[in-house]
Structure formats: structure tokens, C-alpha cells
Amino acid sequence: MCMKNIDPVADQIVLVKERYAGPIGIMTTSTGAPISYTDATNSLNTVLMNTRNLLETLSHLNRERIPERVVHAKGVGAFGYFEVTHDIRYICKAEMFSRIGKKTPVAVRFSSVIADKGGTDVERDVRGFAVKFYSQAGNFDIVGINLPMFILKDPVKFPNFIHAIKRNPATNIRDFKTFWDFFSLTPESFSQLLLQFSDLGIPASYINTAGFSVHTYQVENEHGKPYYVRFHFTPDAGIKTLTTEQAKIIAGEDPDYYNRILYRAIANGKFPSWTVGIQVLTLDDVKKSNFDVFDVSKSLPLDKYPLKKVGKLILDRNPKNFFADVEQMAFSPGNLIPGILGDPSKLFEARRFAYMDAQFHRLGANFNKISVNCPYRTKTLTYNRDGTPPVKDNEEDIPNYYPNSFNGPVPYMDTHKSQLIEIVENPEPDNFDQATEFYNNVLNSDARSRLIINIVSTLKLSTPMTQKKVVAIFEIIHPDLSRRVAQGLNATQTSEECVI
Image 1 (cartoon, rainbow, N blue to C red):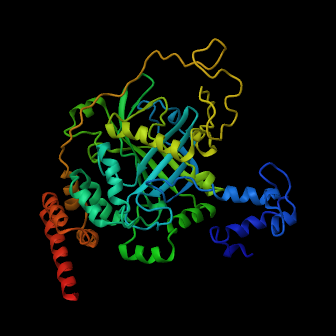
Image 2: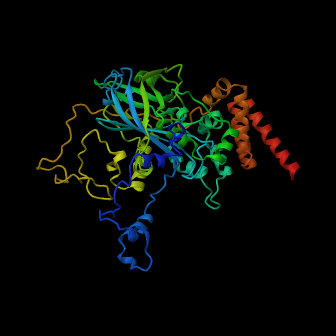
Image 3: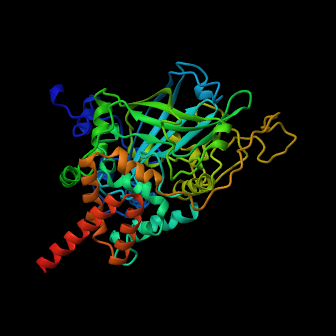
């Protein structure tokens, strides 16, 4: 094959063949017994119960699928490393920031929120941007998104949010009546909602997608002094987007468009990279801020808390097997390491439970012993035993209870126990100031027009009652936004009446 014409995606299986002079070995059963040509190619006129190969493959086929993620089901992953380029040890003592030039292996998963596994990559949606740092002090996960704020701040609303944006329980079809009804009753969502319906709602590729931790993490230096940071991942290839019209064409031709671009780029040695930065606040900044800096439905103003560079995130390896390396990836905001304490908000607290519970359900009790999730750069010693495989060495022959008198693992003696600060969260903050800023000062005239078209295209499918509520909320954000959405809805209704 001419190397110039090789596509690492379309020709992946051909490239596998070219690596070997012939078959890589003899087929076996899962117990290692060789399988004969007759058993592999014919089961007619045989006693099926005596045909181990057939019984094993049929029974395994029935068990090949694990529960699909309820959200972020459609995604793609890759591997690489994070390299420190700027010293922030005076802010955070975490092992992965210990020196300039320090490299920490990472796994990254990009995903859609709404789409099912078989959906299209390019629908208008928020994107997940999850990073697992395999630090020598354990795994640290940032489970972020591609927008600087989240849709809501109260965890009790989250299950209802997911039900509203997913499939109607009666029709099993996505329903924009429920979508817009939920948002019309959840004002805090509108800052992110405007970004989602702007050009940012459809990235050009994952290589051109930014990432945000959304949460404001409490971290500390080696002296125990706290700081508060939000992580940003800025694509070195630039933030680029698709228009709705471009996305419609791509969706019909290649539903795995983002997956294909990322895999091909890495396979061709064009490694995607992101500049990693943090916004930094002191405890005094937190106390003096005129809004809750832990409110995930708001971004932190960059003019007030500018980005400080930390390092580079580089992806240089594709998964060898998608199921093993990506489908089994398990992220959790609760995966923290010394020096990074987490976020004191109730949303973060709820996510610590929800993500771990999701992994137990999808992958079983030993999900952190699955290779892609294993904190392989540190020795794990727990008193947890047995359960759904894999169990690896199952802690071998050491005691399985603590405390014990037989030299089992012991906790380290902490002379200073750091604690997250306690905060009081306002259930009714100013929900619209950042949405107003975005519409008025960030979007240009053309971008505003596209925003209006994108909103009207789905809002017109909701009920008149919901449309009235949404237009009223837009009036608070900006009168021009409200007026133009209302005009768009009226024009749509008039056009439909004429057709009828």
C-alpha cells in the first residue's frame, strides 16, 4: 500500500495486517485451549453442548455490553501527558506540579451530554472535557466541560434536568417542549444556555475545544496556606466552530466526525495540545467578592482574576481498544490528591457521590482495578476485597481488616488536617448579569443573528406558554434579545399558518 494514501482511521485494520507476516497465533478458548479448524467453522451435525467454542462465544456475546452512561454516552478518548511549564508550588503542593518540566501521564475523554452512543458528534450540545492525571500521589480527575460555567448550581435539580433534555418517556423521542419548559423554570441556566445556542454550541472538532473545570478548587501549598483556583484548557489550535448548516451536512455524512478527526491527527503525529492555566484567588479575594466564586453557574471574570499559565496538555496516543481504554474510563470529581481539596459547594459534594455510584453500577466494585482507571504510578493498599472482577491480586494474603496486629497497611500520621472552607450558598443570586454581558459585549452583530436563529429553531417547537416565559426572561437579559426572539417566533407561526 502506498504510504501517502494511508488513512489511519479508514485503513486501521489494514495497518494491523501489515504489522505481521502471518496469523499472530492459534485461536484459543478463554481458558487457553486451542480451537480446531472444524470447531471454528462448523457446528452443524454436532452435539452443541460439547462444542466449547460455540458455547463460549454465544454466552459472551450476550454479555458484551455494559450499561451505557446516562449522560455523556457518546465520546472519544486519547492519552498523553501534562508537562509543567510554570512554577505554582507557592499556590499548590500537589505532586504533579512539583517542578518545571515534570511530566504526568493523562487520559482524556471528550463527549456530548445529550447524545446517545449512536448519535451524531456534531449536534448542538455542551461537551464534556474530562482529564485523569496519573500522578505519583494517586489519580486526580478534572471532570469539566467546554464552557466556563455549568447549567445549574443545585444538585437536586440535576436528575430532573437530565430527564427534561433526554427522551420523552412515552414517545422515546427528544422533546423540545420539555427541554424549554425546564429551562424556563430554571433561570440560573440561561448564562450557559446562551453560550450553547451561540456559535460555541458546535465545535469544529475536539482539537478546537476548550476545557474548564467549572468548579473553584481549594488548593494549598506546603505551608498549608489555601488558594482557590479554576482550571482552563485553551486549545493551541484555536477555538473553532461549525455553523448549524455545516453541522447538518456533516451529521448526515459522518456521525463520528469528531472521533475521526482526533484519531487521525494523533495517528499522523499531529498531536493536539492545550495550554493549561488557572485563575487564582486568595481567601481574602473569596471573602471580598461581590458574588459567590463557587457558584458554577457563573464564570470568574478574567479581567479580575487573569489566567496564570501552568503547563501543557499533549495527546500523543490513541486507544488500542476502544472498549478497554475509553468505554471503561471512569472519572470522578472525588478523585483528589494531597494539595487539592476540592470545592466546598453542594454540587461538588453531590457529584463526588453520583460519579462514584455511577462507576459501581456500570463497571462493578473493582472499577479502579481496571487498567485505564488504575492509579498505576503509586502502590495501592486497601482493605477492600472480592467482588466483580477484575480483582487483580486481591491484596494477596495480607489482613483484610483494620486495625490489626499483623502488619497490615496503616494510615499516615497527619500533623495538620486541612479542611474545605464552609460557605453559605445563595439560592437566588443574580442569574442574568453574565448572560447580559455575553450578549451585549462578547457577540458581534452576525453572531447575535445566528444565536437568534438557533434559539428560535427549537423554541418554536415548545408550547406558547413556555415561549412566553422564555421571552420574558430574555427581556431581563437584554430587550433586543427578547424582541428578536419574539419576532422570530411570530414569523415562524405566520409562515406555518400560511402553509396550513
